[in-house]
Amino acid sequence: MDQPVLRPVPRPGVMQIAPYVPGKSKGNGHGKLHKLSSNETPLGASPAALEAYGSVKSLELYPDGAATELREAIAKVNGLNAGNIICGCGSDEILSLIAYAYLGEGDEAIYSEHGFLVYNIAILAAGATPVVAPETDCTANVDAILERVTSKTKIVFLANPNNPTGTYLPFDEVRRLHSALPKSTLLVLDAAYAEYVRRNDYEAGLELVATSDNVIMTRTFSKIYGLAALRVGWGYAPDHVIDALNRIRGPFNMNSAAIAAGAAAVQDQAFVEAAVAHNEKWLPWVTEELTKIGLRVTPSVGNFVLIHFPEEDGKRAADADEYLLDRGCVLRQVRAYGFDNALRMSIGTEEANRDVVAALTEFLNTN
Ligand SMILES: *Cc1c(COP(=O)(O)O)cnc(C)c1O
Image (cartoon, rainbow, N blue to C red):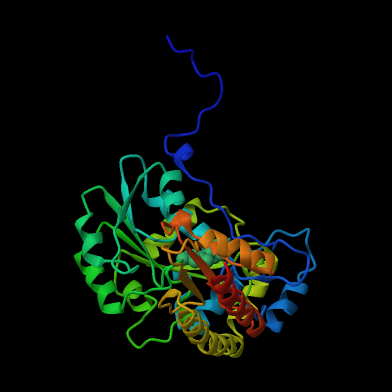
């Protein structure tokens, strides 16, 4: 007979989780460093946000558990009802709350082949079964998702645009997905990069949330707002979804500095416009320059690109990564996302972008 296990054992699913590996933050040398591994902005945070952050002095006091100031600021800027907004410690927390509220053992949740890995973690942590739908050209495929819907499907997670591919679904496709889903399946629209997208056929999901009972949109202050260190995210959903999530979130899940800085940041839309303008200039530049030197770049609408390396001449992504690290350029390997021979690069400062293109040109010529 097997010995009984004499120590605590996590619930089924927990030990199947592959721990999330964040982007590296160090190069191989000690000189200049361009951190392009986590889709952070090269422009820092709004001065108004930094000032609000510094104004939080009474550290002995609990924060406002309802994050009222932040929810009201988000509501005002986006023309929403503050009662339909929930704030979280990054949108990662919102994604986990959604999974804990709507998934349990025996349930399934769908995400797409190269979808954001936090979905897999949240689903397994809630004891449910992840179901992966194949993509077409690194883009979510609505039919493939719908083919995998069963009576057990409680959630569909869709990152739009997706990380790490940078691709997006036009909103008529998102609507087609939504209208074919059972009314009891929650559609999660993760719009972490929405502010960067400049396409007429794109929407983050505000209207679909407002007109449905089974859609939640999540957003973050970690990307264009430059507040990744503070962990600020939010969700917009119908009353009944917000009510469920509020019951299980920690009563003080947002800290006072995050609330103050987030509220100031969202009201500085001039700062957001400057960040969009920077991206509008450098996203096409990086894409074109890398294409010119023979690398394949997945067309991106976010603030990052997925760069595919040629297989045949042995110049693989891992070698390129080392080469770049030696030159102070920190990109992201994306094997965990199903890309064995690609790197993801955040759009950086002009200097960072030029340094990466120069280093990769040299890498392809000399290695
Ligand atoms: C970066 C990112 C997030 C944001 O995570 P935070 O927890 O808010 O920092 C969410 N979804 C996707 C697809 C992302 O790339």
